[in-house]
Length: 332
Image 1: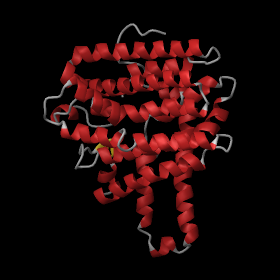
Image 2 (image 1 turned 60 degrees about the horizontal axis):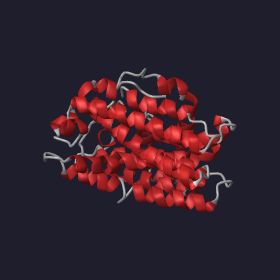
Image 3 (image 1 turned 30 degrees about the vertical axis):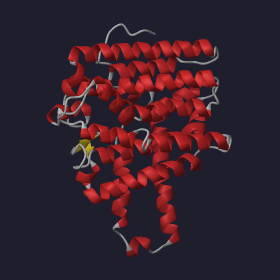
C-alpha cells in the first residue's frame, strides 16, 4: 500500500472500531497491574486503609495517569508486530503472549507524559482530554506517580509475560526498555527538547530530539514484538528500521497537529509548541515541508513492510500497514 498524499483527516474512529477489543485488553491488564500492587500492600498490612487512608489518593492518581484515555499505539504496534509473524494465531492468544510487554510499554509511556506535563517541563493542564496529574492532584503526587510507573513497568513486563517466552528474550527486553526509557531515549530526548526552547534549531538537533523523546519508545514497541516472535536477525533489522521511521512519523504528525487542529480534538493544549518556542518540524522546516515529510515517512514505512514480506514470506503485514496509515492520517 502506497500513500499518495498526506491527507491528515483519517476517520478518528479507526482505533475505536478496529482495535476496540485489543485496547480493552490493554486497559484490563493495566488495571490488573495496579490492583495487584495495591493488593500486595493491603495484604501486608490489613489495617493500612484505616491507618493511612491518604494512600487511596495515590492509587487514584496512578489510575488517572494510566487508564483514563490514550490511543494505546505502542502496545498495539508491539502486538501487531508479533502477530505478523504468527498470523495463524488468534488475536487473543497473541495478546496473552505479549501482554507483559504491552503493559510495560504503556506504563513507561504514561510516566513520560506525567513528567512531560509538569510545570518544570512543558507545564500543561490537559492530557487525553483530562486534567493532567499535577492538576487533578498536585505536583508532588505527580512526581511520585511517575516514579512508581517507571519502576512498575519492569516488574509488569516479567510478571505478565508467559513462561513460554525464553528468559534471555525477556532480559533483552528489560535491558532495551531500561536503555530507551533513560539515557538512550526519553530522558536525554526530554532534556534536549527542554534546552532547545527559544533557540535556533538545526535539522540535526531536531532529529535527535525526535528520535529520543518520541521515537525510541515507539521504535522499541515494534522491536519488542519481533524479539518475542524470535525474528531472524535480518527481519529484526528491518523491524528496527521501521520502528525508527514510524517514531519520526508519529512526532512529525504531532508537530503538524499542534498548529492545525483544536484543543478538543487533540485532548491536550493546541498551539502550545509555538507559544513555548519549541523545536518542531514545523518551526524548523515549515508547514508544507512537514506535510511532505509525513507522506515520505509513510511511504518509507510501507516499503519496509514490503521488504519484511520479501524476507519472511509467511509474515502478514496488512494490519501493520493499516497502522502506518493511521499514524500518517490521524487527527488526534
